[in-house]
Length: 243
Image (cartoon, rainbow, N blue to C red; front, side, top):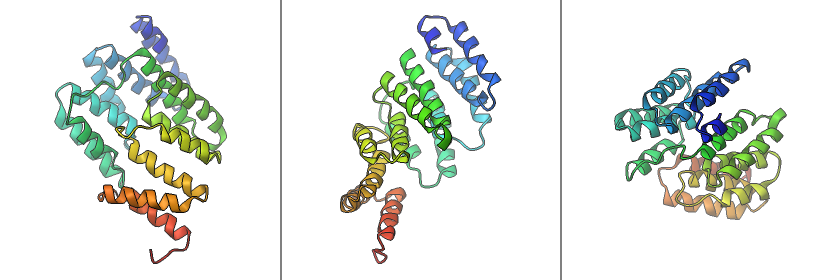
């Protein structure tokens, strides 16, 4: 589909995505990809229809859909709708600070589109497949698709986090740390990367470094519940109960 977009064949791209219907469970992915596709093609009404359909079809919001739909709303003068969607995600995902961070970041400057080129769209598709396949029996495929996504779009924060998670699950904490170190401090996903880095450091028996990093993060972000929880977990695992 995204290759056809690159060739200027929007109708052909739409047709290509319809083929996902024959695979059980892939319809939500098709609808989301169609929303991104028409958003990129600047067909605003069609894009909005697909974003709304995608949202209506998911009782439990996932972050990628929430962020892309809110991004679309912000770019089309619907700041209140974007804020409400981020708030709904926060209510459903207690302890996640992503939505408030995104809202803060996007209220301070012009909101850039989620997809800026067909290559970005293809990277998104690869990431979505990697996410679906991030299960014990298909984790090797998840690794492959995450690598594809990052080859197409090197600074793709969510794909970097997913790849790091896959590598951690495969008992490769050193490689996971390397991937996480490539996420820039100005990225929305930098706090998540630092949290994962601390877990990897602890896995590598570099627990003092992990604790120091988490204490620094807790001091910098006193409102961050996730940092305190992670710090508490590491201390508990090391039987430092008083701390």
